[in-house]
Image (cartoon, rainbow, N blue to C red; front, side):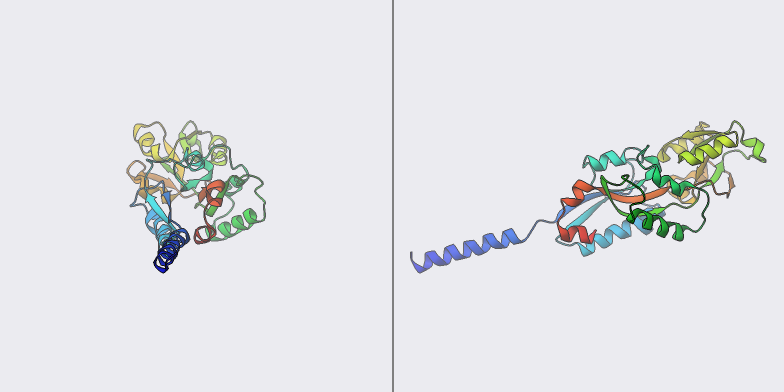
Length: 253
């Protein structure tokens, strides 16, 4: 073989090796389940995604999708498992029946959000939540703030709660409402505004963080700052999808 042929073969080999070595950037859809103007999106979820995109250039990138178009609080677990979206924010208590041990966070016995978050993460890492997270990978988790009670009409005494329909986000909060004589109703967060507006419910047990993104201040006028239970939230992936990522991408996430 002539020298020119050797050189051509050598250069083709180098080009092939270079192409092989440079893996294609992995793109993942990340849903926030919140309007883009919501504080949780602006101050927490989007900044995190932007940091991932900055650190992950050439390795992994997140396509941020706001709102409830690709998933909602009720179906997000299945949407992630079915790879419709790859990463999402979620409320565990809104995903029916999958996280019973996690419901310890719904107890109205704590008021220090930071300490509760640290304690919960330690319990999770120690395996104290059983098999609840075997099929997913939480990238991070924390409790929500304690819920307060919000009404369209003012209840003046505890007896006024009898017969009142109240939207609840957890089983325990529902039991509290029932014990007071009220009627707990499970309604998706994105539908609470309309339910209050139409009178389908008379009130809601929710944290103040839900007010701005879902404009609940427009349909409630009276508020009781009591510990009405909390929830847990997370940003998560399916374990299968997470394990399919490169080690470098997993480390960045």
